Image (cartoon, rainbow, N blue to C red; front, side, top):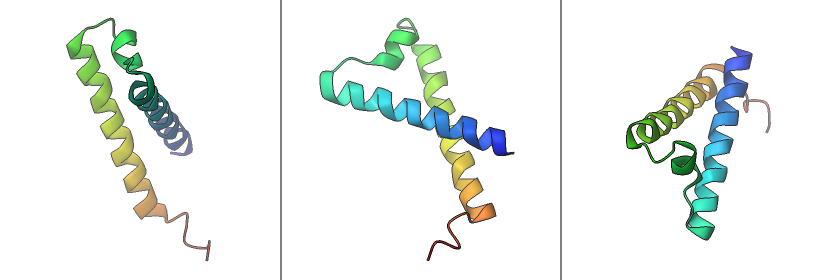
Length: 69
């Protein structure tokens, strides 16, 4: 479970970096890595959605920020 969470965090960080590159310079890194194939592009974007849902589940289930205050 710990490794899955680290992998999902890494995926979301990569997608965030790709999105910021696209926002700043207009070059879509993810579409370039998918070689322009729209089906693979959509599958990669759905992976980001699954990673976000996993981290949302993890935050609610384990409440890692409970003792920060």
